[in-house]
View 1: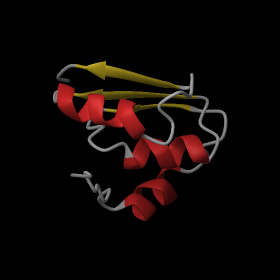
View 2: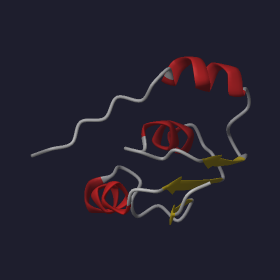
View 3: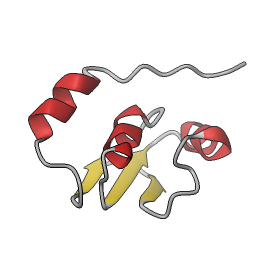
Amino acid sequence: MELVHTPVMLNEVIENIGVISGCSFADFTFGGGGHSDKLLSLGAKLVVGIDRDSETIQHYLNGGEFRNDPRLKLIHSTF
Protein backbone atom coordinates (compact mmCIF):
# COMPACT_ATOMS: atom_id res chain seq x y z
CA MET A 1 0.00 0.00 0.00
CA GLU A 2 1.35 3.39 -1.02
CA LEU A 3 1.70 6.03 1.66
CA VAL A 4 0.18 9.32 0.55
CA HIS A 5 1.41 12.37 2.41
CA THR A 6 -0.03 15.86 2.08
CA PRO A 7 2.18 18.46 3.78
CA VAL A 8 0.29 20.86 6.03
CA MET A 9 0.28 24.52 4.94
CA LEU A 10 3.02 23.93 2.36
CA ASN A 11 2.39 27.09 0.35
CA GLU A 12 2.14 29.26 3.47
CA VAL A 13 5.37 27.89 4.90
CA ILE A 14 7.29 28.37 1.66
CA GLU A 15 5.87 31.88 1.20
CA ASN A 16 6.91 32.93 4.71
CA ILE A 17 10.43 31.51 4.53
CA GLY A 18 11.51 33.95 1.85
CA VAL A 19 14.77 33.23 0.03
CA ILE A 20 15.33 29.50 -0.42
CA SER A 21 17.89 29.08 -3.18
CA GLY A 22 21.36 28.50 -1.73
CA CYS A 23 20.15 28.35 1.90
CA SER A 24 20.23 25.47 4.41
CA PHE A 25 17.23 24.22 6.38
CA ALA A 26 16.29 21.79 9.14
CA ASP A 27 12.97 19.97 8.89
CA PHE A 28 12.34 18.71 12.42
CA THR A 29 9.16 16.83 11.47
CA PHE A 30 10.26 15.25 8.19
CA GLY A 31 7.29 12.87 7.91
CA GLY A 32 6.67 12.15 4.24
CA GLY A 33 9.18 14.76 3.12
CA GLY A 34 6.76 17.20 1.53
CA HIS A 35 8.28 20.40 2.90
CA SER A 36 11.82 19.16 2.36
CA ASP A 37 11.05 18.12 -1.22
CA LYS A 38 9.68 21.58 -1.96
CA LEU A 39 12.71 23.30 -0.42
CA LEU A 40 15.07 21.14 -2.49
CA SER A 41 13.08 21.72 -5.67
CA LEU A 42 13.44 25.47 -5.08
CA GLY A 43 17.23 25.23 -4.82
CA ALA A 44 18.01 24.74 -1.13
CA LYS A 45 21.71 24.09 -0.55
CA LEU A 46 21.04 21.56 2.24
CA VAL A 47 18.03 20.11 4.03
CA VAL A 48 18.47 18.08 7.20
CA GLY A 49 15.32 16.04 7.82
CA ILE A 50 14.74 14.62 11.30
CA ASP A 51 11.99 12.19 12.25
CA ARG A 52 11.44 9.89 15.21
CA ASP A 53 9.77 7.24 13.01
CA SER A 54 12.41 5.08 11.35
CA GLU A 55 9.78 3.42 9.12
CA THR A 56 8.79 6.79 7.69
CA ILE A 57 12.42 7.57 6.87
CA GLN A 58 12.90 4.15 5.30
CA HIS A 59 9.75 4.57 3.22
CA TYR A 60 11.12 7.87 1.87
CA LEU A 61 14.49 6.26 1.13
CA ASN A 62 12.67 3.59 -0.89
CA GLY A 63 10.91 6.01 -3.20
CA GLY A 64 11.18 9.66 -2.20
CA GLU A 65 11.82 12.20 -4.93
CA PHE A 66 15.17 13.39 -3.52
CA ARG A 67 16.29 10.13 -1.85
CA ASN A 68 19.58 10.11 -3.79
CA ASP A 69 20.22 13.84 -3.63
CA PRO A 70 23.35 14.65 -1.59
CA ARG A 71 21.68 17.88 -0.41
CA LEU A 72 19.25 15.82 1.72
CA LYS A 73 20.48 14.37 5.01
CA LEU A 74 18.02 12.23 6.98
CA ILE A 75 18.38 11.57 10.70
CA HIS A 76 16.35 9.18 12.83
CA SER A 77 15.98 11.04 16.12
CA THR A 78 13.77 13.19 18.27
CA PHE A 79 14.35 16.91 18.58
